[in-house]
Length: 518
Ligand code: ADP
Image 1 (cartoon, rainbow, N blue to C red):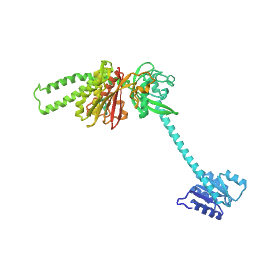
Image 2 (cartoon, helix red, strand yellow):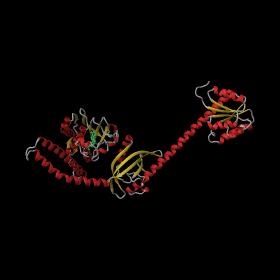
Image 3 (cartoon, rainbow, N blue to C red):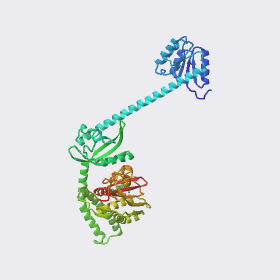
Image 4 (cartoon, protein in one colour):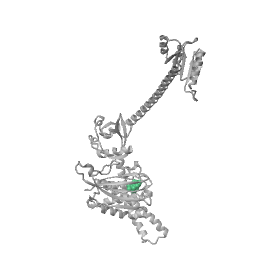
């Protein structure tokens, strides 16, 4: 049954025109595209110009016999892989052996049995197709191997010569698998002292709990950027570092790739600079504000309307600057331990209500609804500082909400540890731990908004000093970029934890976990 598109291209070389016509008609009938020639040399030329998918080749031909034709086909790269089926009237075993030895794949004997010829052709075309596919796959695999080798070489070179300290550890038990020379320089250890050990065994100062939580969070986000940690070197010196972690697979073992940036010197300079500038700025700024006060009180004469407007702009900006300086100094004093928490018994519900009252004006102005569910739980804490934390979180939630949005302040009493993995950060209920020793109760305060949200790569960094999602946030929203750094400091001084979960475009929820007895 002829098909519209030829199935395969078959070249028939036979010096007997009757055979040729018969084969040609039969194969054409089956949908094959058939070229037929009576001479070996013509067949060879044709095969070179357009290589067919299969060749039927008569053995007994005058000028050049089939064996020779086959040998020449096999000698050429272009025709080497074309399957050749011999056509023979001879039943001699020697001929068959010869047919195979010169590269034939099969033979058919005259007179032809139609089904047999077709079956053999089909079989060899299928084999040839499979071979082609295998060759293609092989090429593809070789290409992949080449690419992998190149990628591996690039990684190895980057790993060895990177100025950033890099370490690879197993996820299962945190053992060092490989470290680069920069890491050895930073840590002061030798390769033998590190490989096979854990950070805890080497007392590198990276808290296993924090690290494990970071890795747990990694499973959801894929990478972890700039987790600030302390790093203790062999000589006992403590360095401040930022760690970026990626999950990788090494010989089938799940590992973490830890890229470290040593920020000790940068932090020292930053602190020195900030504290110097702040102290230097505070005195003249305070006196400037005094002068602005005197002007606005009219003690130096009446101002025109325009004068009052300009004065009001100057006062607003001076106040903002003073807020910034006070925040910087506050944070600095807290960090250096000059401010300690004045802990006393206080009630969470009272603090929550106070925070709401303080922020109500701002919420009204922004047309944001504030909903509070106070929880009467006693805390051993610095009430003023916790109030500062709650007002700051509420202020942010309002600032980053659209008019008409709602901000919720609520609290739950929990038992157990706060888990800072993404999903399981919250404390676990006592019921799920019936056999465990009774865990101490804790309080989880949440501030939830429906605002613009925070991108995943910023969820950690916004708790750093001067870190904002958008560089224009402080200008447009009047913040200092220090609020969350201060909140974190306060919460940590109460042995608590603070973190945020967010869906960009849908809103954010800030969590403050505090041991209820703190
Ligand atoms: P700021 O004074 O700029 O508010 P913070 O440290 O309090 O400083 O916050 C840092 C940054 O975190 C903000 O500038 C903002 O980009 C982001 N942020 C904080 N809270 C929220 C929130 N509720 N929704 C969206 N972004 C927030």
